[in-house]
Length: 100
Image (cartoon, rainbow, N blue to C red):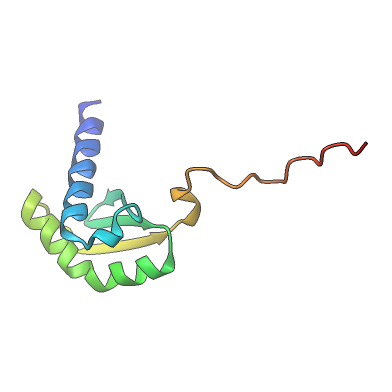
């Protein structure tokens, strides 16, 4: 169980690092999804942010590796628009009210 909390703590620290190293416009649009082997997986809510993150991926990896003593060599970017919505769109519309 402590291994799980260690991973959660590392993800939170990486998230904080990204929020300080990336331009402020990225805040709320990028989240650390996981570390899979030597790959940092980030999730974003738009292809626009995804493209910009791919451009910055070498700098992101360099920062994360140097700050936390990791040896990550890849950065994968996922686009998940629904993952960032606070009020998800219902799967079907609510029923129409009865007409009088």
